[in-house]
Image 1 (tube, one colour):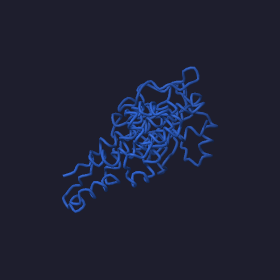
Image 2: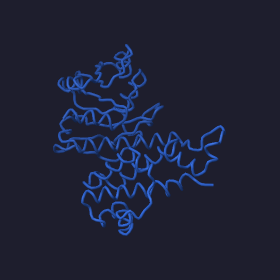
Image 3: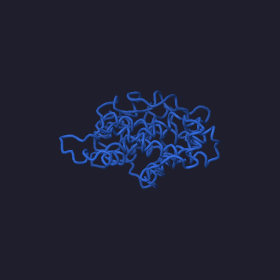
Image 4: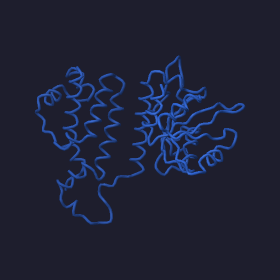
Length: 298
């Protein structure tokens, strides 16, 4: 009997760590610095550097692993990403690969009886709600890093503040939406994020996203920025579908009316009214892609 966790430890982890150590060394970090970031000994880093650790060719060749290594390497080397953030992103990928993917395949090869099993469930089906929550939080973290590293993003923050949110696939209320506790604020020209993303901490942007989904939008994430006609025009120029809604109607009624023709919007906006600040809501398949859309506005 072999657990998939053993495949992670024996096949994935040595390969992934060696790839990340190699990337960090290539960025000029010392063995001591790499060891500190990865939480391993300098001797282990030396073994990775000299090819003394056996690596799995399929893990080495997987584009998702390669992409993650490059992103984590850059973030850790520049200090823009903490070791905890790097671990969270790596964990999300591991869980993805465990679920009917590369690691599941390696597991079945190590224990052929699994591939032949014809029971009523798949042993590699994870707790989908938990995995979806992990992916949502990870995407919000990635999106926040994009915004924090985008020079000029602070100029797009409305007076009420911004929030970046992402919901679970079957979200039914704000408790199913991950976002920033409080709001992203412009503090002396710099976007300031008050804390790590959590579920149930955004009310307004979460409500906009949920209302949009209720009335036909496919997006699972949203980021609000200040309204300006030029901003809407720039989003239009990107080929995005922009839809206006009535700021004076109730939110649900306003969005229901705006999307009554079946439009699947990329952007929702309202141009303000007496006592109501105009705001643009940029939507996305996930939080990171919504943040990337906003980054291109700066």
